[in-house]
Image (cartoon, rainbow, N blue to C red; front, side, top):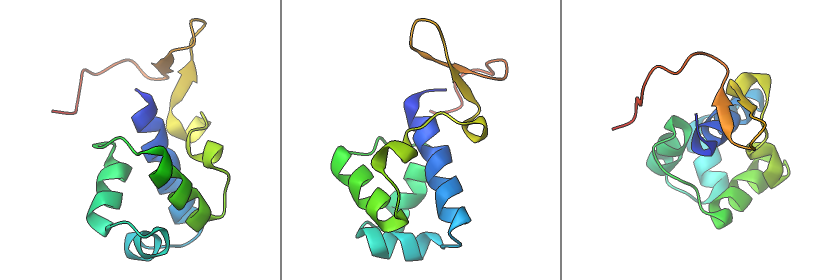
Length: 94
């Protein structure tokens, strides 16, 4: 699991917690719904500008989108790298 996956899980969790559809959040953050969907799937990396716009639309600090939580399914290893909390199943992204 990399930081893109952590961001994707947090974005989806925060959007759902606020009861927003992807269309609604995309409109509020001024990004396309298709792009938002790809971010939530962990397909694309988000720029700092996009992270800021999404955080503002969700009314959270940008760091909240990058925070390691139980929901993200990752932990921080001693060397500072992300480690999946479940055994690695191979690269699922093509």
